[in-house]
Every structure is written in structure tokens, then in C-alpha cells.
Image (cartoon, rainbow, N blue to C red; front, top):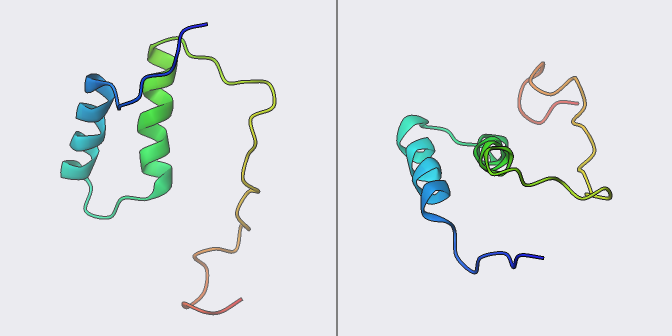
Length: 68
């Protein structure tokens, strides 16, 4: 098994830097999209038991801040 790098690979670091320059408001989902694209491009497959966060409720964004 190949060991994971101890630092961010150069091409991934450049992709993340481009995201920082392009988007004023970046979310974790934006960052994950860049990382996921990099993993797929390099043929890195997700483990079978990769934990996932529960999906957000569909009501998000439909009320004023602090409401339901």
C-alpha cells in the first residue's frame, strides 16, 4: 500500500488556491468538491465504510436566520 503524503500535493494545493481566489464565500462543500475531484482524477477510491455526515434538512435557506 502506498503511504499517504504528509503534505498537500502541489496540484491539489494549486486547485484549492484557485478556489480561494474565485469564490468570495467558500464553504466546506466547495472545498470538498475540489478534494473529491482531485481524488477521482488520481484514481483514489473511497473506502467501503467511509463515514458521512447526515444530509441537511431541506428547509435550510427558506426562512430568516434563526427560524426553524
